[in-house]
Length: 189
Image (cartoon, rainbow, N blue to C red; front, side, top):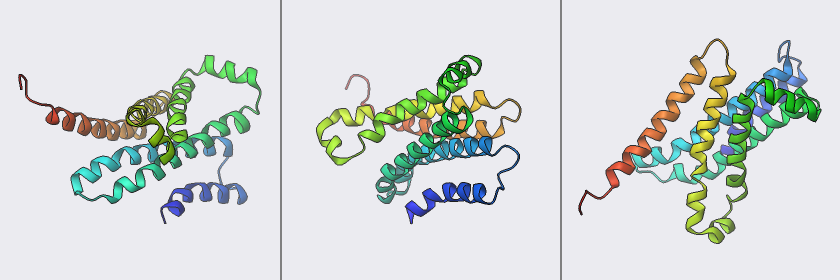
């Protein structure tokens, strides 16, 4: 069921391509949709630990890896859409775009943060890395910040949607900070 829900946005995009219903600029629509779903799933993945803490249920943690991998999947589709469909693989244009639109660098940095997390998401990597696995996977916070900044910088006029994602990220990181602060031993103890 979780796989079907995670793949539903992609299925709707493919349907839109087949039916030619993605509007006047289908490449822009695909780029926007894949980026938005990457960000939504990244935020959902970050929300699962607070959800577990607040509800006392363990099922959110079992979904965290799956949601994180789908966030990376949509981020890969987002990047591939820009490179292949938008730029046609013209590498010189990639560098021109980076110079003209530096927000792309933030998105690429977010993708680079997610890459080692996706690679090391298996039980084997968890065993190999031991404690360092948890430290490495804190890159997800940087990825979230970079992805939200990428979206905020990208949008020119109506900032409501990227600000909503920024607020959600702020709440999720704020909860973690609060819990970490509360868990600290008292001064002088």
